[in-house]
Structure formats: structure tokens, C-alpha cells
Image (cartoon, rainbow, N blue to C red):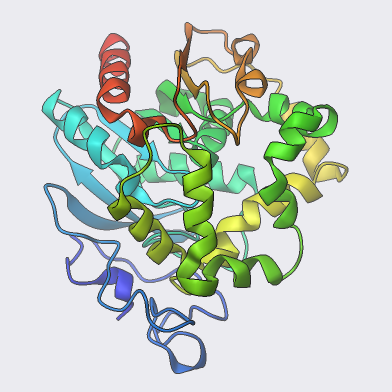
Length: 344
């Protein structure tokens, strides 16, 4: 059994819909390693993405794959989608706040990360957005409040455009509208420099090896460099370093970044950019750290031009790339207020 399926048994389990050569469905791992064991010495041995807590862990089938979720509370659904290099646990503070406020908080592991399937393909934004809306339907809901950070935030923009009827409200954190990001990566040298790690991810194989080398020290360096004065806890950094070392995660988790850069001049990338001209019809809260060194505030600013519903811009002074972890109480209060305001 894969490491990320124990010790907390899910309430609902479905078979693996796909796997990479390094991550076979039988859980044996590459070269006979148990799935979840580090290729560099077993840092992840005894560690589990399904940590026990006030939440319930489940597996869901959606869009041809298996997805792990953690769920807490009852009421209207709020789906929380993490960014890179994190997994569902990044939303622990918001799950508690939302559950206390009378909402059903569900944190999703994206395809290729955490406890979800690592499929050989399917990491373009259109398919990943369909993962998100598919999970909402698999949870038995027709619609949900959608919250996304970083990669999850970018995909939330896409989901709101592709399946508008499924999104009651949208909260985007540290993520520019895809058209603004595309423009900045083509014209703004400062944003290009801030995305130097994304450019480095374009090489084959080498980025994956560097990410897991020395017990994922590079991930720790990224996390330290991307926060403001309120740095992430030592526990959080440790968990994210362990999570990236689950076999195939390093590769799968950077595939969306490879698509982002490589598709810019391809027909699929141009078609995607045209599709994203369609306005978002869900009320949108857009949260950005003023001290974010990865996604510059100037790049994120102005996304309201693509929103035909109420749009609120919140710039948090002194906050870096992870507002929901750097200032969890302030962020959670803002989020709860927003979803309450747009509760159906």
C-alpha cells in the first residue's frame, strides 16, 4: 500500500486511474522502493500526507484520476486548492476557521502531488481545472466557493471561466490572471527574473534531481526566500520538503510550469490565451502579498478587467508569497467574510 494511503483509512477509496513509471499503481515504487520512500535515503519513511486531525481523509474519482481530499465541517462547500511546492495541509488554518463559521471546508491535493494520482500526462491548465470542477461534483455538490493559491489560484481562474455555473465565489491568492501572467512573462523583465525557477524547470530531468537532492534542501531555500517577515514554521518547511520527495512528485508538480513556458508560441497555448478572454462571472476576491518576490504585485494587479461580477483587490503589506500561512488569522477572517457575503 502506498505510503500516502496510511495510516488514516479514507472513507471512500477508488483504484488508481494512472501512474508514472516511477510510481506504479501497486505501490512498489521505482527500483523496488516502497512508494513514498525518498530516493536519497528515506527521509519520508514514517511520514504521511494523511496526518490525523479534526479533518477526515477521503479519495474521490474525478476526470479520470484519483484525488485525495481532507474535509472538515458541514455546510456550504468551500474547496481549497494549494500551490507549489505544497499540498492540502497548507490550508489547515483556513479549514478550522471555515468549519467554525459553518462551512464544509475541503482541501484538495492536485494531480501529481500529495496523496493524489501521479498520472503520466494531463498537466495542462485546462485538464487541471477540470480536475477541480470534477472534484466538486464528486463531492455531491453542484457548485462551491473556490479558493486557490499560486498554481491553485491560476487554475481557479481557469475553472471559473470553463465551468462558471460550478463556482459560487472565487478567491485567488498570489496568482495573476493567466493573460496578465503571459503578458508579464513576455514583456516584464522583473517578472521574468522573479520566475527564474520556472525557467530553470524547463530542462529535462535535472530540475527533478535538484529538487530532491540533500533532502529537498532547494525547496527549503525557495520557501525561505519567498516569504515576508512572518516566515513559515519549521514544521511546515519540513513537511513540504518531505512531500516533494514522494516519488514522481518532483516531476509531476513542475509539469504545469513546463506547459506554461513551452506552450506560449504553440497553437494550444495561443488557444488557451484566447479562451481566457472570457470574463469570470463569479464574485472574486483577489489577495496579494505586497512583498511577494515570486508573483509581483504589479503582475497580479488589474485582474478585475476580466471579472464581470463584484471584484475585491486586497494587497497585504509586508506579506510574501504565502498569505494564508504568513498571516493566517488575517487571511482567514477575510476569506470567511467573503464566502459569507456570497453564500447562496
